[in-house]
Image (cartoon, rainbow, N blue to C red; front, side, top):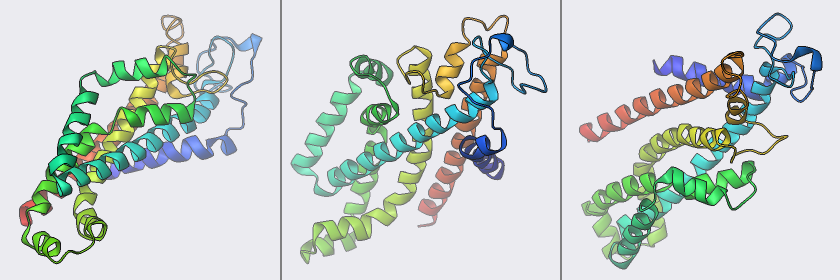
Length: 265
């Protein structure tokens, strides 16, 4: 299953970033004579209600969705790694401040917090990356903090502290390698979650603004014609499902490897 998931993910990345070199149809071209055309040889995945080719739009929208997913997951995981490791290592006032900050963010449901933030700004790829990152770092940070507590209690860390070794050196040299597996698991989960978050916002009309497109905006554009043109919403929904499914499988596999290493150690 992990090999199949990696293949699916690799295929979708190649499809999104290099598909336009093979399938050269303009994703923005309007055709009055090809409105809501069903999948055919000319239009393999059909067209939308403005006559735009769905396959070309999936290729173009995939770039935006994947960039938002990877970018926001990377930033959120890095924030979680830094704050969680600092809270677990320094403890005391730093840890109490961390707990208050996390509780403050968790007071509001994540998606409603996203809605509140997006409603005050004009959404773009970079704005969504920042907003999704701000609202998505808490889970990673809590996991990192918990693991950091265990690392801090190890004898060799106590010896390093007694020897007054530079704290940053301890964090980067001794904590980072042990926390890396948790970071990668959180990152893969975060990519899928970020793509779903962006898709949900775009579906509600609060995500990517035209003429930019993402899988979420393409899916949203077909909700009014789903009874007569199922393909407009089905194919972008399928892409979102495949990416999320592949990332969840990869995350579960990485988590299993991490658990095995912890048991052996």
